[in-house]
Image (cartoon, rainbow, N blue to C red; front, side, top):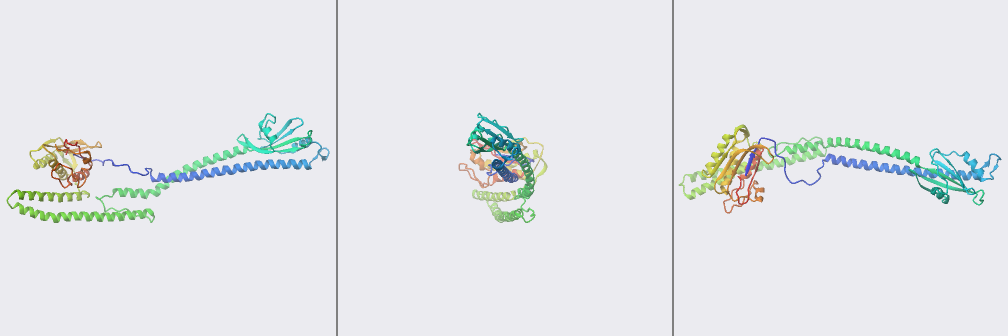
Amino acid sequence: MLMTTVPSSPPPLAGDPVSGPSVPARLRIVAWMLFVVALGLTSMIVSVRSTLMADISRSANADVTHEVKELQNFAATGVDPRTSRPFTSTTRLMEVYRDGQQLTDREAVIIYNHSTGKATQASGASAPTLNPTSTDPLFVKMLQTPSGATSYGSGEVRWARVELEPDNPSQHLSVITMSFTASRVDQLNATIWLMVGISAAVLVLTGVVGLLVARQILRPLHDLRTAAASVSTQDLNRRLPVKGRDDIAGLTEEFNGMLDRLQEAFDGQTQFVLRAHQEISGPLAVMDARLASQPATRTVLQQRAQIAELQRVLDDLQSLTQAERRDFAHLTPDVDVTELARTLCDDVEAMAPDRWSLDLRARGTATLDVERLRQATGHLARNGLQHGDGPLTLTVAPGTDGYGRSGLEISVTDRGPGLSDDDVDWLFERFTHGEADGRPRGSGLGLAIVRAIADAHDGTVFAVSASGQGATP
């Protein structure tokens, strides 16, 4: 068993990992907010693109339909400007029609003469030029299909075919009107990418603003957590300030109410133990005084030993009750460690003068409570004497704890039966007892007090043992 006292920062917390999210609440809030905003922006962009693509398709259909109706109307009612009479030749009709056409930059017209097998094309400024020959699959498809649409470039091409004089082989013409959407699709894509860029900027701005707002909103919870962490059984009088009338204010009020109930229960427990100590210690002292006046027979000595054990249990209960208070240990700076070691040596030798070997190597000064360390060492010594055989060793020397911090090491080593790994885990809990092969058992409070004293000195306490090989107390 080893107790180390050091005047430094508390050791890191240890324990099983806590289930649940480990991401801070403000980040989860902002992440969900960004997810919703991103989902909304994505839905908007997809909807806008789908709507505008449908508009482009409808516009292309309208262009083709308009051209077809215009051609059909011109073929039915048009007159030759040379003769001021109706056209007598489809070739002449298309020459006049083509010369009078004002094609948009995305429209094109192909005129195919079946008698000669030749085709001519008129195109707008940005409309592509096709290869109207029998080797062009698209042109062949247009000659075979009255109307249709197919992908072309970054968009598509929509067409409709009008047949002029199909029953007259020498005058038979196929007029194909086309509308290309690539230029408008390119413009749409540029607009969509602009929207994507703006949306990304909005997301970044939303994230930054969200973090600031979430931090501001959650600041009272952070303050509540900080204040709650500082509340302990050593300072149950502290209450958290209630600000506002929102949910956090309600939570703070409930927390303060919980502290009120906790303080009431703790004060009641403390008063009960102190009252019991006073009420029982008096009769025990009277009984011991009466026995002291009688002859020192074996029965009298046993009764006095039992009274002393009862008194020690009462004192231990009182010490554990006080261990939860801030003034449990009165730390004094610049205590002479060498003088402390001699005092501890005298204390343990008074318990069993012939069983101790000493290792007193501590030098210098330290900040500590001499009386509490004497109490802790006494419990360690009694534990070793009760459960160990043969000589024991008291060590007071410089040492380090499990976290690498330097300090003062106080240890008691016995030659007892040792402890199993399971026993070591709960050794310093209250009201726990080790199995000692028929040896008398203590109250189960002594080592708990040792741990409380080590904690009060910002130190650690632990046991080093192997079953059958003794322990280091």
